[in-house]
Length: 197
Image (cartoon, rainbow, N blue to C red; front, top):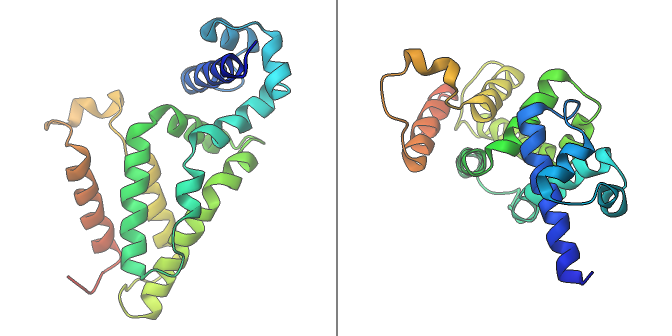
């Protein structure tokens, strides 16, 4: 097998795992199902990833925007930092709903795998918390509890999505990504009592 073929099969296995974990959950998905979906030999999961747990971790190495996150300037102004997180989380949520679904399932079930997720997502949430706190110190934001505000903002960002459950109450067409980012930014900044333009 050539290096290109090996890379191709690894990516197919990762894409199949992401799809099935999002649909059926980690526990509800077998290695055999992943390999059937990927058109790959079952032995290749052990060969390339060392098992299902490592395959789960590899999803975040492959599909989470780690390089983009590493390039963020942690010293940017609070308002710019908060806006950046809103924009990038919303764009990522729209571009990779499967990985978002996996993250949400693992958090809700409080599985041992959330430690792997934390390694990738906590740097971003840490920056958001820092910018919200710094904004209050600078008088740009006004709120009572940093913990409450931080959890409210992350809840809005991580769990806001159109699900069939809510369709019976929705009357409008789903907005485009830019309109959604603008609406969420306005809502979050009002919640932070932003004192600016």
